[in-house]
Length: 122
Image (tube, rainbow, N blue to C red; front, top):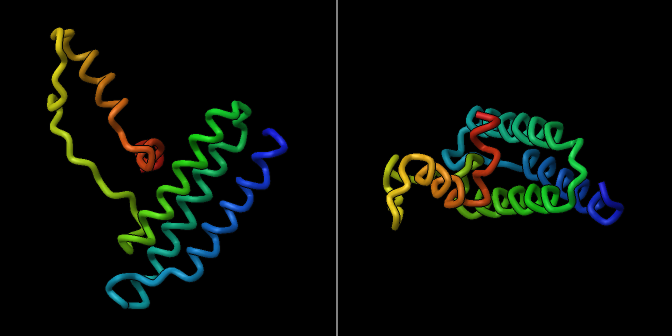
């Protein structure tokens, strides 16, 4: 990991841990808050450990952007889980009709930054 990105990643991890400690569920029930706090911690640990060995600065930057986006979306919408996207399976049209491979490529490119690692953890 580059020397400049290490403090950013550690700061982001501390921010997630603080957020999990202060998290209050939208329902206001203590058991919901405790469950959501544990979910936040579990997912953060899983993703940070999975990406511990990254050395490519572009991939590290993408992970930092994803984490920042998920934090901001979680705080804004008061939900600890990523907002789902609703795309029908063949909802992306191609101009040349290249078939299913092109549809899958377009689907992968259209995925928001905050959902890049969600399928891998879930």
